[in-house]
Amino acid sequence: MKSFSLHDTFLIKKFKKIGLHRDPEPRNYFEIIFIEDGKGKHYINEFIVTYEKGDIFLVAPEDKHHFEIEEETTFCYFQFTELLFSSKMNLPDRSYWLHRIERIIHHPNLLPGDIIKEKYDRKLIWHIHDVINQEYISEKEFFKHNISNMVSTTLSIIARNITRDFQPVKEIPNKDVPTTIDQILSYIRQHVYETDLMKVSSLASHFNMTNSAISLYFKKKTGESIHHYILMYKLHLIKYRLKNTDFTVSEIAYQLGFTDESHLTRIFKKYNDMTPKQYKNKVLLENNNPLGV
Image (tube, helix red, strand yellow):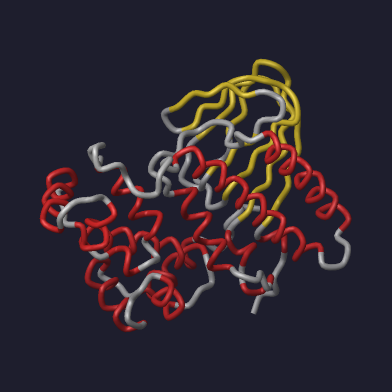
């Protein structure tokens, strides 16, 4: 079996650029981009945002982006796949970390731009950036483990900045304020791992509606039932985990509230015409070198 190499899962690229900078596509890795100096515009998907010294961007594999540089810019890229957090690195709670990164990537209100809003968090992440660079260059004992933990910490800080912006002031919605479909979808995505909270009766209670009222409202707004939406979202997360982690099918089944591996396999095959293991093997064949180096 191929031995684990940090360079298969984590790279640091630091460079200066003027004019236009565009990443190769397609990518199967994440990027945390630090703007060490310079300014310009960042085009990401259909959005255009300005950037300046000190900004930090998180770019997911599916994002299409490039920079139009107005003043010579020094970029520092942390490029990594989720294999950085595999069991080989012995991260204490990979499942917890995965909840955080999925919440970032699939957050329904996530907008592009500088992702850090709190002054303290920005200072902390830039300090972590400096230490990761030092560990990466020195390659001293335990440096791989240290880097994986520090990148995980960075993503947790990013997650709390993103979710803080969109948390409601009150946990329970005000009865006098009409519930919107975005609120329901966001709540489902946030709590999809908690099976009891995904019951129609629990959702209805949280949003101060009857079972029939929330079911009819959801169907009218989305064109599908609550149960079907939750199932499709779980299947989306299952594909994501099969593609990007080393969790077994049995572990994924437990994490997402399926009875057992056979239950997950039956549902997955019904909607994808292949078993989870066949899907994972297909992905592995298509992507032997995730960073393209």
